[in-house]
Length: 370
Image (tube, rainbow, N blue to C red; front, side, top):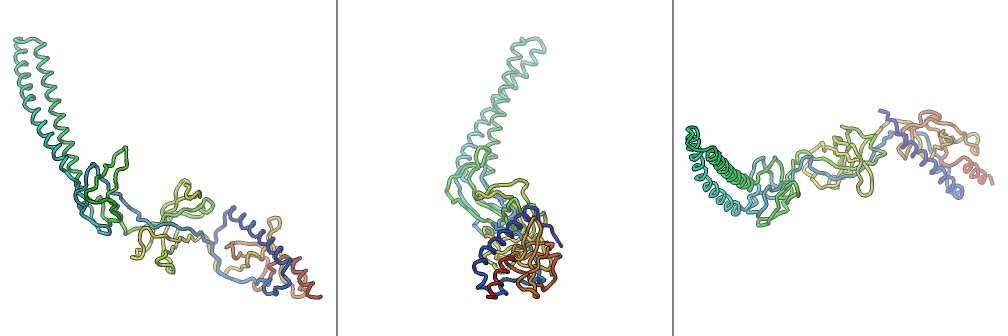
């Protein structure tokens, strides 16, 4: 399928070709007499042309969770090891409960202590209410008994809430796996004191768990090329572990805004790994190839054979009848791979064209006569 090159890429190609032409003229004007005609010409031939965007990134699990404790304290026991597969709900870590158990006992004592005053306040209120209905006690006595009962209820409820909070914290000392996956790292050890994760701090990471059945590659694409990449774009990549084995993948995320990484502005692009291989592991570097355009059996020339003047492309065709006078022909160009350029019209297959400017070619042939 034929794909148009972006205007910026086309402009870059034109500048690059012009620089090549200038460099060729400067170089060959002084040394063309030492080179054979075969090295100064190229033949229009058919070949497959392919434009790609190359990038590198790091392989990471698509789903990864950092397990943290919701309570601060000392780690009593770690039940898993790195590389171990766990199921959702499996026991991972148990925190030391001694301080919390003491706090729970204190809360239970406080709760028990608030119950007798509450019961007494309720009895007093009921009695004063009955007497007040018979107009045997004043309004003030009745209101005071009701206030005493409300205070006793409030103290009892506060003691209940405190006990519930301690019980909740105790339940969180047993940390279980939030997902099915593989334990990647355990950066803590038994006996270490850790900080709970809260809104004011990130907390201590106990371990990382990831689903290794689906890996992704995070890469950064520059702002010129990202417009040519689309969702579900099929790509290939290689790793140092499998340098000669291209592996398939597809684009599943393109960042909506640019980021700066290593002083380079670009857009984050994530590629889903299409094949699960034991050789591919998180943390590996990957070289990703994004195919942009491809043309089969296209008539093409080396980029150095095509010159530009006022946005018009032309070539110098070798003239067998008059070797010193090449024929200038305007051509219509297409896909540019930075090594070869597609020729849509202007010359035919197997025609020979110059790789140097026409005036340099003429000077070279004049020297041959003498």
